[in-house]
Amino acid sequence: MHIPAAFPVSPSPVITQPEEGQPALEPAPGIVSGPGDSVHLLREERTPLPGVSDCVARTYAVVHRRHGVHTHIYTVLESRHHQRRVVHLRQVLPGEQLAAARAWVLAGRHLGRLNF
Image: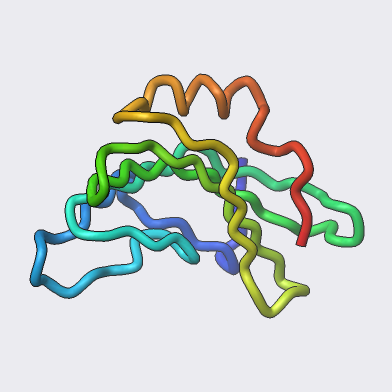
C-alpha cells in the first residue's frame, strides 16, 4: 500500500525509550511512552471514516514497563483535513503480548468505532 509523503512513517518498526534520566523521545505521533517502554508499528492503512475520506490509521503495540508490564494497542488517526491527530486506546493486555496484539489487529478488531 502506498502512503503519501504527507504521512511519513518511522523507518524503524521498533523503538525503545532510553533509560531513566535520559530525555524521552516521541517514538510515534501522539503516543506517550516512558523509559524502558517499546513501541511496535503493527499496521498502517488508509481508512475512510464518515466525513474523512483521506484518513490514515496507524496501529501500534506499546509495551509499558513502568508500573508492571502491560501491552497497549493504540490506533492513531491522521488526515490532511484535520489539524490534530486522534489516538484511540483499543486494547490492554497483561504482560508482554506482542503476538496476541498482532493477532488481534490482523483479525481487524482495531478499526471498530473509530472517529475523529
